[in-house]
Length: 175
Image 1 (spheres, rainbow, N blue to C red):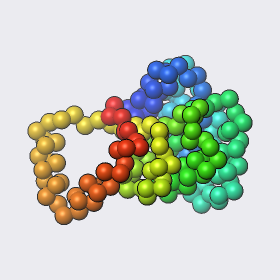
Image 2 (image 1 turned 90 degrees about the horizontal axis):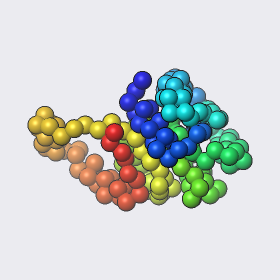
Image 3 (image 1 turned 180 degrees about the vertical axis):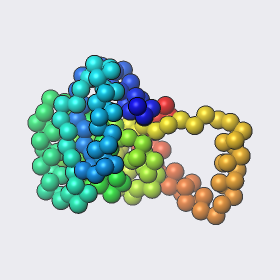
């Protein structure tokens, strides 16, 4: 079982949530984690109460309908596993209808967490309060050497540019 899914299950356990909603894209990437996440949640006495699958080409109407359906449910914990483009649409619509406010807990898998720093500022702002999960790479001589080489590459300035506006709104957990 991937460690990132155990991390999500640990967060669910720590907050004593018993149910979560899963929103993922209807692709092999999106649906591939569902059995593993389900098992990880079962290990902490939680379950998936609803699963919403979005086509990569999901219309705004479809997204709104799914979000309104989720709003009618008792579960307020949402785990999102999808591509950057679809995730951006989802969070913009969620903010628009008030689902990014107090009362909801949003967790994104490493797929979105890794791409967060490349998202437009309006998406970053819409994702205010979202918890991202990604693996932690322990500090080591090898990591320092890699970081030094990386900084020497010409495109590393792009990372620093995007990093400045993201840290205010989003906190990836290194687990």
